Length: 341
Ligand code: G3H
Ligand code: 13P
Ligand code: ZN
Image (cartoon, rainbow, N blue to C red):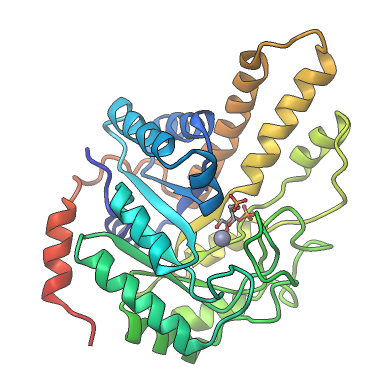
């Protein structure tokens, strides 16, 4: 199966009432972990790369690793998605490289830090929709601003400063024609999301439900959705790490989101924690080892375990064989038949 458009995966997820994890990658081992987890659980897959990941992998390494994944796991519907594109140019370069989906994150200015105006967000997102849809490529937009900072990207803060306004979300979807909509409901990127188990005061699931009720057909995206499990924190700290006490997004809350229109769930931090814990353990227990395979293999296995668990929890497990890929050219024809007003 060729790399597929994210729109097709999310439409299928909506039909089946499940969510699809979108996992960040930077290297071969992370891609291998995801593909093995997908085969183990028979899951369709979204692999995503941030700007930092693209630069770390010099673009071409990443793209060709994805082609290898596609060749070695032909039974898995596989999307390559640009995470948090900061400009039209970034999204265009991803499309030119062969990504089948892009996020235009116009909630922030091009610096990836300063919250933007609604008008700016509509303008740049619409521009990306026009050039992406002409090639059958999917577009995710964002309305509202997440908390935290990853790799220099993010406005900082707790995530409660710019929670998504439902009416504004509706206008944004109508004026841009995005395929998927990321919303801000109090989550942040990174390990430090909440200082206690989150309740409705800090994790606004009621707002998500309100948005879904207003826009029942829109595929919603939850960013900052790592659960930051205590056991992964404990392994890191047991073997010399220094993580401060922290809470992530409980899986039950993500599942509530999935019952209310969430189709894409972004997870990076949990995998970073799993990898780091596994490597620290090898270093601490067998300091005489120096072959990278001795610690990269357990790291890869630890990430595979987390990814497989999330695939099962989000409900995408068992759905890899449900459909054949719609070629991007056909997706482009379908978009052309329904232009944005
Ligand atoms: O957007 C957040 C993801 O965790 C990617 O992080 O920009 O450090 O690669 P990164
Ligand atoms: P986490 O930091 O919670 O894993 O979020 C990842 C994300 O939203 C990537 O876009
Ligand atoms: Zn994100």
